Length: 406
Image (cartoon, rainbow, N blue to C red; front, side):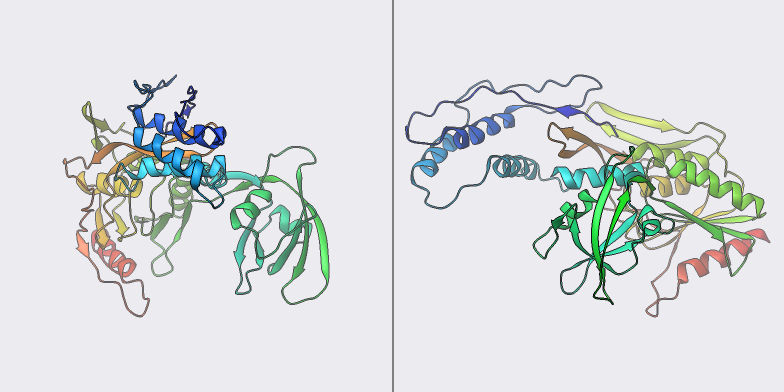
């Protein structure tokens, strides 16, 4: 994904009426709406949006701000709240569910997830029925080594009390930070089953977020199983490790599980698709300027074994690119349910306060030219999910691969 910082410096717009108006709030709205006059684009390097040609391009807004400032009796939003609201409103008017705005704390978490690693203490956080924040430390995490136990309730962070009014985003952000000597977080906790309070200082370390799970199948150890939960910057490295270990186990067939994989990074998904192919087209990208075929570079590391890809209606975006490339090139078959059908590509732009916007910049098609937006991939073998929770898709994949093995 291309990340670009966009910053706008706009001259204030004078209002003719309401001399008693608070200038700061008025200027915020008028200045922000001038942004709506630019025509967006994506450039590698410096990005300069076109400025609105006429300062009076939004006269209705100008009038509305005047009336609100002079007569509105309740509390008005802060500068930041207003700015975020205007940006959201603009993006919503584009009528694209995949073009949207994200505030800084959520944008930081998203960036960490896509990177597959972050600086932190290695815990999952959940709210219990009472609204308390409960910690679940990862295996071999700095939190676990420091003494944090599963079921510990956060009472304070760096001597600041945590209560029911605290937000999950704020808590998550406080438990992450830069990895450097002495950097960490002070936690006061009480286990859910105890009354004694305990205090720890936990140092920040690099926490890895796995995106690939692999094993040989219990039902048939000659069949390898790889599940990709999302496409992060670490996925290709993890995938290669999975393939190496499965080949050492002498598997003779493979199941690739993309069920519930809602996507991730485009380039990493193309890399994974290419590992299954020995030449051919990975995908077709359609932009305003035209269509562009994305060819595979021959020499993937998993081009030989019989292959089944498991998909369902949670298989979307980048994972559909992988499944679609495998199906269209005849490399393997799809088993499961019709995929979600997200056929657009987004780029993430980081704004000046570390918030971000996702912007749809292209559509992608399968190598055969099939448009998937709103349609999805049709499996070669369609399976209805079992009401009792049995994994019938995996069972059918085993049956099919055994037939292929002879």
